[in-house]
Image (cartoon, rainbow, N blue to C red; front, side, top):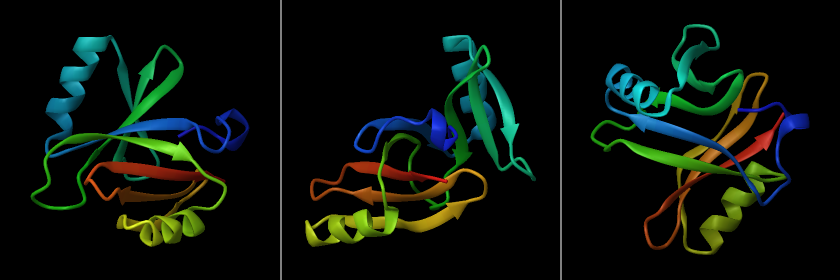
Length: 125
């Protein structure tokens, strides 16, 4: 995810992330398909960045929920992840990944709208 100074404004999409069951196979597919490169992110390399040249274009990680299928999640920039998650619940959505901090990046959560579509929310550090 981009640093705060590089992020779009609240309400705009700011990041895309592939959550998959097979990180190696997904990385191989997208690097060949779109001429991207991969680069480990953070300590322990549990997260991989997709790069186009020097630009970060998305992320790749193993799905945290066993049994879920692979999917792309788009993240919208928000001013306050906790407040936005609470608002989603009031609007009959669900919080499927509770707000948590990503060191040196910001705070994220994943929501599901009343029709079942997932969307991420991101509050830059």
